[in-house]
Amino acid sequence: MKSIEATRTYLQMLSPDEHKPVTLVSARAHVTQVFDCPASFYRYLYCEVGRDYHWVDRRNWTDEQIQAHLSQPSISLWVLYHTGAPSGYFELHQYEDGSVEIAYFGLLKEYTGRGLGKSLLTIAIEQAWKKATHRIWVHTCTLDHPAALTNYIKRGFKPFQQENYIVKTYAEGNTAT
Image (cartoon, rainbow, N blue to C red; front, side, top):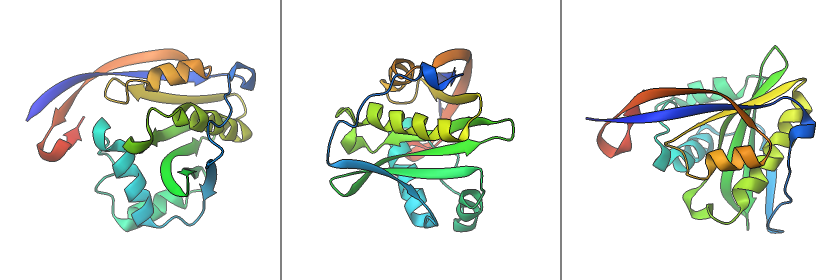
């Protein structure tokens, strides 16, 4: 077992006016909300997007746990398709206080470096503001894609908190915090 130190940064946007959008970089890309998502598809998105970034919290969720999670009215799932193939996704979590968290966000490895991340984040922010009354927020860490923090800041998010923590890595890239 190996330990890795990571820094988690929390960012927020307090007004839609702070958003710095970009246009979708490819006419062959589109984002759609997924309703009644099969557990296997959700698991695929989560595992493939998070494979290189130590996403393990939900990896062992049962089909029933995934369905219970996705059936909550406060949760919405959105998928980016590029040339017909799933390329990335984001998950929004709406809170009772009127804030919305971009709880999960990312691209499949094959689609990074094409400008799709900034386009997908623009859409995630737009969808979040349709639900939020005063604040949207997100967090990222030093284990995420190297462009993640920069993308959030360029789209208008501002950091408001940081914390350091230790991640224990196990076989096959599994981790625990």
